[in-house]
Length: 140
Figure (cartoon, rainbow, N blue to C red):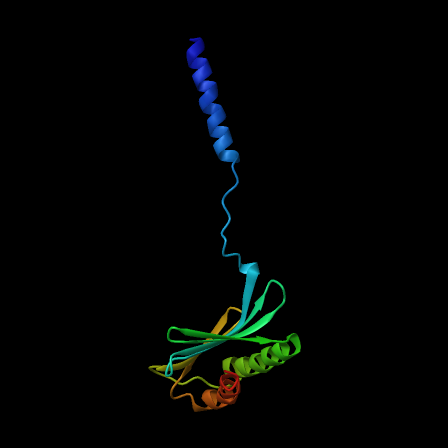
């Protein structure tokens, strides 16, 4: 009888220790970097994005097929880029009308988690974002 009680207490202790163990944390902590905005050009298969690191460094990145280019950007320039993109993004999302029917996406825009697709037949939306995209692409 005493053996059963000892085994029961040991198993109960093991269960309590297992439940008290903290969960493992992901090494892909979202605080280490933040994508402020991104532009995916589906025609040329290029993706541009502005990233902020945990150290408050800013990097402008370009992914073209398997190649990736990185340019460091100072904080003032990064804020200008962010504000310019944000104003264009919000205008495209809320002010310019979307086309009806089937949509062949040419640009995928993202701003801090919000996304917007620009269709081939959305000329006004394309005209709004294209100068910004051209200015970004000249940096690479």
